[in-house]
Image 1 (cartoon, rainbow, N blue to C red):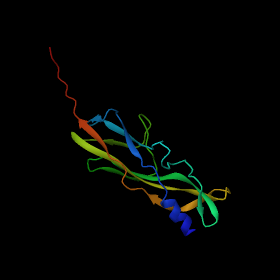
Image 2: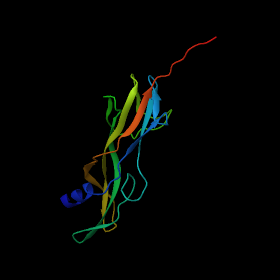
Image 3: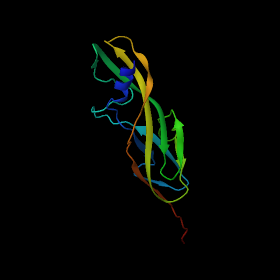
Image 4: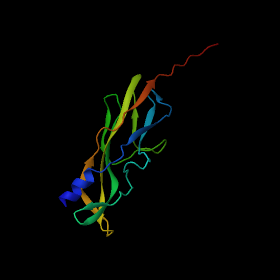
Amino acid sequence: MQQIQEAFVSLPFCLPKPSMQPVGGRTLVNLPTFYEATWPDDGDCLAPGETSEAMQLLSWSIEFRAAERSYWYDFGDGENSGWTKSAGGIYPDGDIRHTYSDVGKVRVHIDATLTGSYRVDGGEWQDIDTVADLQDEPEVPYEVVEAKNRLVS
């Protein structure tokens, strides 16, 4: 089992990238911003819900299926979400939200952990009792601006 767990954590996992709303790389002070973890779909890495190519481990053929475990959203202003099982979502139903109180440029990123399941020689899927703690997830620049209104006659 230890070899299966070691093989799982060494898989080429994709790295989640934060997607924010409002879109366009900017939000307003005092406006709730919505966050979502997005996973690349380029085929070169393994994202949650995807199954790996079979690999030989001793005399068995092993496949892995990745699954989301937890996320930590770093909003770039010293605030974070803490660990959550939510991948977030878009307005109005997304449950990962943050409201910035100061203008400026921030760098948003998501720390993620994955778990999953495995099967031997095409058999039944079994949960794997290990966690892959992803490293070096990308940061996304985001600007917090202030809208100023004035009345003119």
